[in-house]
Image 1: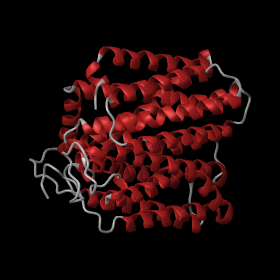
Image 2: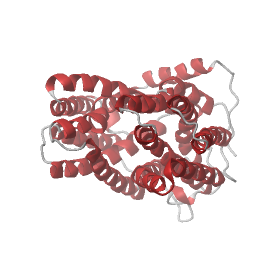
Image 3: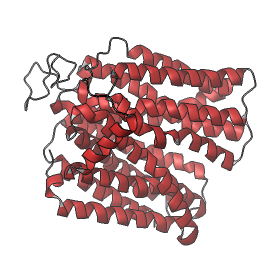
Image 4: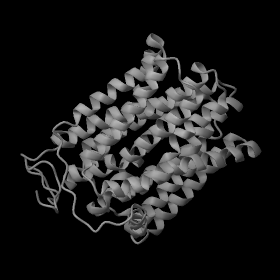
Length: 423
């Protein structure tokens, strides 16, 4: 296999501008990418299910309060902030399939241990915290390589299609995880909740059988922190990547935190509804994400994707600005659906543009930074927004976040034509 192509299908070329009739038209037609996609679908189902299951276990299974629930979910997510950059560097060093298998096997061990402690009636809150940290560690090592393998397993012309298909898998897992976990718990108790996760993770491993990944280029070994820092220097040295990461950071701290966290407080405090009704809003948003992910997947490679991505962020920011001042739950469902339509474009275009602009030999490290910004900054934003909401109200905070995001993305759209014209 030629090192400069690094694609798994011998009939696909990464450098061709067009596609002949006998070349694959969809990323899922590539066997190695299809195996990765199936594994990602299962893995993301479990990752989404765990956040729901841990909170449910603490509140109803162990009789804990909201503070204990929040700490358990925090412990599940905090390893990402400290490990994901080093994990990204590791993804550039070792065989991708090997890292996938080991990280998922680690998660299987954690889930199996939880199941055994439940069956023996020995699962305490202390065990929940410890197992949450271990689960977060295994997920932190598995996430960067999952993203980094996408541009290595598909030709360049199918990259946006592959990212969109992967986003669709993420959306499907968001829609199905909590309901299926709820059904398993209703039928078999918390043993059923973790038993279902164990079955799905094992099935996901079977999907990786026969998957081939590109050979790893031999490079001088340095400390993982040094290699992680090289990704940051590369991003800062490229104007296009610098702007793309800036917009990702702005979305994580403001829009994402406002929509995913502060809006739940608005429902309870300003609309006087049960905070659990947030599930309906998130479901409407997930449907919107799924629709635009399918559209991007079917359209494939498009011209001036940078401008389309920025306009989608402008639309999403405007919608969030309006959300903060709406008092009708029905209107909010519609706005969350529209937010999902814009968000599907944002998710696929931002990741696809970052990956298409990044050299493949440092893809793992840059994806580690991508995940750190995407998931590591949102808890910080949620903490700051929660403090602000106590002073000026949750709805006003949401509106301000939408306005800030709109100003920043409009500035980059007008001021950086290189990013706007990115293909």
